[in-house]
Image (cartoon, rainbow, N blue to C red; front, top):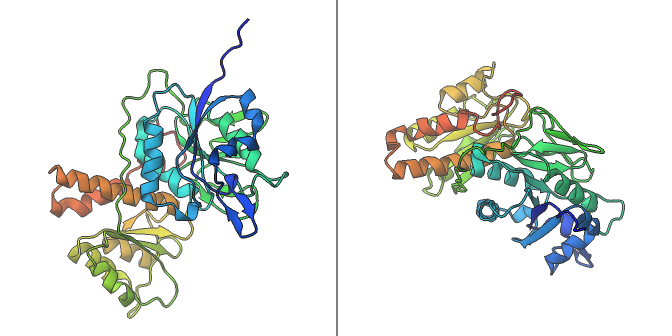
Length: 359
């Protein structure tokens, strides 16, 4: 009697601690990433794996072109009969990559893309490399239709997660949105998770493009806005992210006010400025304080309760999208900022807003 074939998943390796080896000079990626699968030989009993060596780098070196590579690697294999995809990735920028792929695939994604990584190398027997990989493969078999992060005991929406700790095994959190699933004896999927549809969701609107030239400025007490002047006037600068205090508040006192900078960016340079918060669970959509309201009145675009990673990935994605719309004549240059504002403030793939299903 023939055995029932095991479900198939595609495991895409990009590097990170989960596959690192220890040397006298410190941690480094393995010379042969295919050895990575040896950390969890029991996976052969659970799934049939196609291993794809896409990248082999520390995640601190990830950039938007790598987001596109990851997205294309999945998209090109989407019809190969896999139950889902697992992407092994470093933890430092995993939440940026998972957010980026969520936007790249959009609302019509109808299979799981599961990011995972580890806080320890596979050599640490009590560490999390092996167990996180096994759990991520198990999550990839679920009828999910989202980009997610599977880490420790939780499955988070990829565009709602952020890293919270460098050493503890519960390295990620989702401050403004509950976990999609809890990993227990079984995968305890929650009603808010987006599920696969047997009839599909229509063709994926695949847009894996992310604009370059984004300047991020973390506000600190006493930061002189004039230091930004050369950057905002540069032709290489396409937009600015202001990481604000509290609920979108920016300094507005003479000499340190960022209000003139925002006005110049939007009205003169015709470049968008978005406001994120150092506290991603706190909304910047409607600040009750004057400094926050002044920034929005000056033309800054609020990002609501998006995480910083999601806001960053979305900003690059929206700028690339609007740029393409302008090339096609669908958006006029005079309406560029308004179109960017519209795209940034709408809920596209469940990245912002209250806890509710996105179907």
